[in-house]
Length: 227
Length: 173
Picture 1 (cartoon, each protein chain N blue to C red):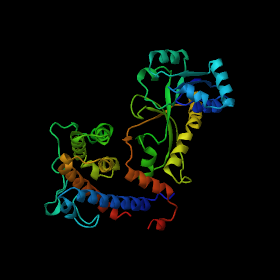
Picture 2: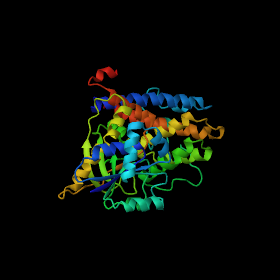
Picture 3: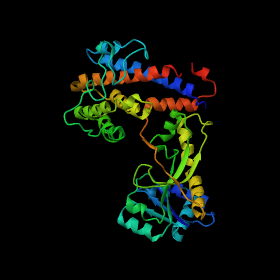
Picture 4: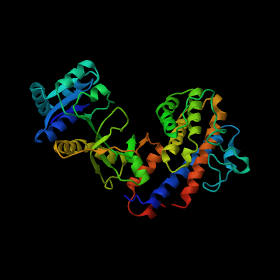
């Protein structure tokens, strides 16, 4: 299976490489899409700079300053003839970019689909008393509405005492979740779950409710402490 | 982490009480309006009609379709679908108002919120949170003189919503 990791940061691209290079049956390419890729390169440190240059010379790693839906970028992406894209940028993909991959682009969303779509979903899950976790699904042009869910994992956040730390942990699971999703996709018997109806789009949570979510996270098992 | 329902309800109740006090303070700071919020009771959760219901003593409680929150001529929120209205409020109207919006931007936001009045009374807290976000943006902004009366009505409607949610939480916390 040919996979292309689309990354906003070189660090993340190298993390993909570290986790997926030895994965059997996966041919990985890395694309760093950033206007500041040169600055990233210069700050990465000598050891990793050598690795980066080696990957670049082999054609495993590419850099672009252009938008992903720029026709020249699209031409390069199509030339990879990849099965799957792995989302690690901060952009919304247009249909041409999504269609540049045979199966589509996977997104590791830090909420449990289909219910929790959109923004601040970890906080909304906490506020509602629902499980938190990560869902990997094939994107479409909507907000977390892509119809095929490939992997979904509930993640217990009880050891975290701040929203930032908990969210950072969920985000840090992206590559691990992509590894799991790619393994499933390579299984001939696998079929994705539907990202069914019943989901709701969530929006940026207010400071008021975010404060409540944060306190829910920080609570221990003694409600008396709250009085 | 204890995310049991009573604990969550208790935390939420406390936050809403604090917010209601803040709304009252803001309302009092707007000239000539302090009595309106006090009319529905001194303590949170002790009365005060929710949005969409008749307020006791003819209080200035808005209805979802109507009155207390001002509606600018030519609404920026044409949809009757609460989901679509919520999307418009959160994606377009709220960002516009909070980033240095003028009177028309704020009125458009208030109008969008007014249309979410009934939905904001439900257990789906996304709708109440649109009001929360609007209040936080309003509190951080300098209220234009020309917006004072409209803002006062927005605060009254928001306070009524908070009281309604607090009344519901009374039995859960």
